[in-house]
Image (cartoon, rainbow, N blue to C red; front, top):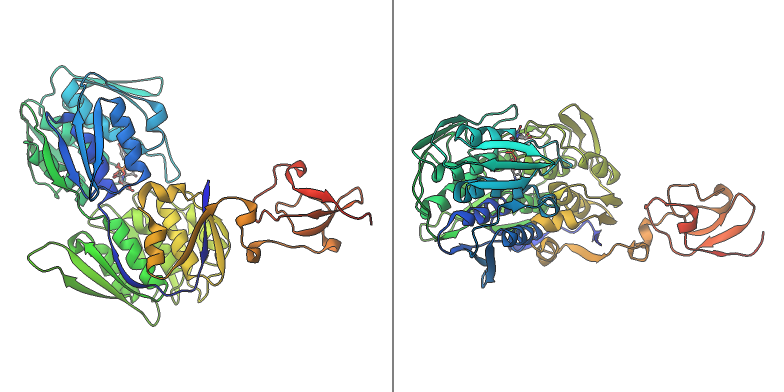
Length: 492
Ligand code: UD1
């Protein structure tokens, strides 16, 4: 397993390009299950999640081939498989996006329930409600959703839930409606740009969908869908992360390939916080811009809530919290989409942030200095927040479990390093923990190895023997005293 060693305190400077959107690419890839010809997608980031979905689609009869310039070609060569196995689905929740396309095109789908994750329970009741409304017969057996439908029929579907609409649920219902008999209307559809991008692909395949980007969708079912070519939208969450990277390090960063119309809430909030951003639209009538983050004197505290689009995305809540931990005063961050998405709070606190949680909010007392520490990533966006905070901290930090980060950011450390960051990807082992983060304790204070930390130097055991701990394992808790790498020292 890898970890990052980050040496903080370096203002970022330079240009960086935003990749294609992960959250748009994943459901779009799944939609290839419905196409009667090859689907070629441009700007698909090379990420672990994309590879996992390619693998799952492979088990469902779709071959995927990487082409130059981050293009991905997908083609159905066998339309008989209908089972999405738990072993693959559990690795990535977005696998649920195969449900609607399989049901619509093959009349049957057996898809493992994805289960919860670190950011919340993540039910799929709204997906199932929508598909049932279109006439699917659905039952849950042994952890699998088993959906069948001889022919789906257009219907009126309301997709609002207690926490707003559902992004992947809207995609699933839209897919099923695209091949249903008659007209479907979806009310309280998710308005996220990724959902609109999904609809754009379906329309390029021959679907008839109106109202994309609004909560009211009208879908006229068609007989079949053809292959198509499509450019995935830029990743608005990655763009926000890179902008915050510039701001939190007091750097000067130009972020290219940004759809500013997808980032209004983020830009508005960064403006509130005092981050200065210049916008240069790309020439030639392009819908892309380059955003220039300029060094800010000081960051102003604020109150913000993560909400469904066009509100501030829950996927940048953690990164904002990292930024606000450096603001000059008290901020409040609330998450109304995933009210339990606060596991990063404890890790940011290890980096010197002053944050405490109150229900679905976190209260952040800004501090001038963060300091290096060993921290553990708990989910994809939390990992990004830890990288941001570590880059802003004095000294060195270790970030463990960065496999979360690799799921959703393409070569993030290389791109940040090209801006002047100092991030090393190393094997997660004691020897790679910087000396500055290793705990030492004097012999007189050490009585046993029950301490949650390995100690470097001499340690006195309870039986009176004194031993020397060769390599400090930093903050990793000991499994048992026998796990310590020790050698007998001179008898006391
Ligand atoms: C997608 C994104 C994820 C983002 C989230 C919210 C992808 C691949 N993932 O996830 O990065 O954080 O949108 O913007 O696009 N809910 C229900 N019932 C359901 C479905 C959802 O109650 O059937 C709730 C969820 O628990 C959550 C809220 O609705 O509180 C939004 O979830 P949803 O939009 O479905 O998230 P995902 O599509 O899974």
